[in-house]
Length: 325
Ligand code: PMV
Image (cartoon, rainbow, N blue to C red; front, top):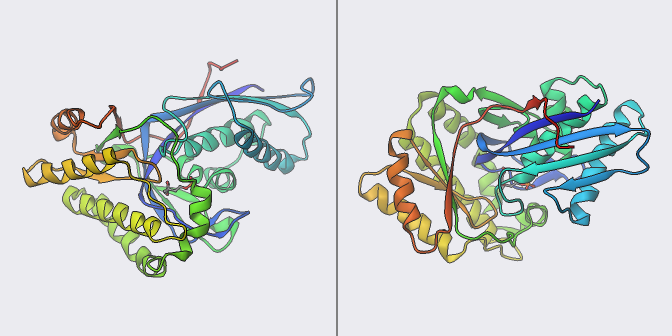
């Protein structure tokens, strides 16, 4: 059955960085994220005995590495029921891929749900999360909605994600500030491998469970100031690991720094907003809805900012009736 799924990407508030098992993609540490409604991937999958080989089309064009990763994931799913049917997969994003906005998260979440359903497999959210994780770490969170925790777990069966608050729990706005539209220079696959070479990495791991518990509490309390301090501090701690890894990973562009400084300046003036950054150069700026217009207006005026997009907290993936082919 041809199946189409729309899944959203997420913003890691506490980042997944480093793997204790490469093949199973078991993370060194747990992570927490919020799903981003506006950053989504729509994927249609169909299996048929008429297809001679898998045909993969991501955002119109697909490079060999990406196609191979998708086919490996299809193989993982086919193996569950011993199917040898080939598939056609067409996927489109509402945002640019490869720029550090976690398109692999929404992409592999949508692929996992669409491909399993297309093969008539009815899996639980936990099983889908475990499966999606093996395609892309972030995808294991994007199978869920709202505010999500990914448990690090020692085995494949214990490393999956769960929603701990629904999207409706807290209305936050993420202003995604684009300072460059090119591809990011840092590959997270390589970065996960070199994380351990940072002298700060073991200290980070020793304290991360405490940080996760604290963040879940401030989200529960809807304490925006504590939330903001925690997630901005986490983003800077994460980048200090990148900077001190061997080889050093410097993700920021001049525009990234301009945005970080502007956010801190806004706070000095009493406008509360906080930033987070993944492995790319674009910046996520989080504010409460009341402040959003003012924060965005100021960010739009910065000399190195190309554009801004806004997203609220989103729900989990949905099946769509309209297909991409
Ligand atoms: O899923 P990956 O391998 O692209 O790694 C994601 C890494 C971060 O975005 C930096 C953090 C995270 O938890 O999403």
